[in-house]
Length: 441
Image (cartoon, rainbow, N blue to C red; front, side, top):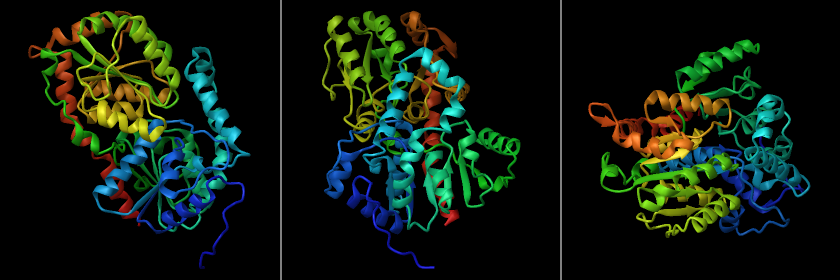
């Protein structure tokens, strides 16, 4: 039955752009969908259309953007046509309060330990009732309406809506953690999963059985997670022992919602003597968050630490913030990953895997949820990650760069060696996912 033309729903933002992206998704070899953030300035530059309503950019997750973009980069490398969309860009002015509520609540919880505890208790129930889902349904349904190929989904919300609309979906399970929402349509034969590792595959099949689904294990394929292939190519800091002859290079990073702010503020206070003495250099990554930028600049002013230019690798402190998710992501790839010895970060799906792809070690902050407990366990098992002891951070740093733990090497050298050996395998996830996708088409 031939597809008929459908007018753009009147309530959507960026109507002409939505129509253009609908056509692109219909015609490319690899259509990709995620739910992570808006990037309206980039869409305006590409399609020349200004948004009609006052709907500022929002960010929910850098991971879901960076992993989707990893597939874009890999598809470019393979000279295959592709298009990636985030339906959040088209949410109507009427539904925009749902988007702002979701972001505000996420940021509030990220900065409030008591609310975080409540969120942990109610996690599954909250995720099943997010207003975000109803807000993106109409734009996602329209923009993907004429796609006949399988669609790669980087977020279970998008994947579930696509399956409800009769689409064939390759759902990427981005972390070593399986949420029940990944299994909402587990009985649908048009759903295939790309998972992190064999343990994640086993867990998915086990949870499917517990929830009453019958899933052929051939529909669950181990690919690894998608990591931007540019990271390993851009890595300039490959000297395992470079830290012996210069300050230790540490990046302090936050996520899409601005997590671990109080912990990072405490960390800065304890690190300040080493920064002022020139023992460590810091790249402070704010993501898109103005309050993080204010925190870092205030710290520098109070402690009389000069803030360096972004392109000065010898500066004791540099501060990086993007105006939207696209710009923020590129700052990491252009300045931070190629420079750092290690990252101090929560064990999140983007930062942890990308840090290893860049050949860096990890000092992990408090995890944000069960999936990050799993990520922390994986990276610790790899031998590239330990937990940051913030109140004793200076002693901890001294120990990991001086105390031999294996063949007269301190932990930092052992971890950097392991990370650089792991980097090629970590960097193949995007290629493996596209290889699996070709089998579905």
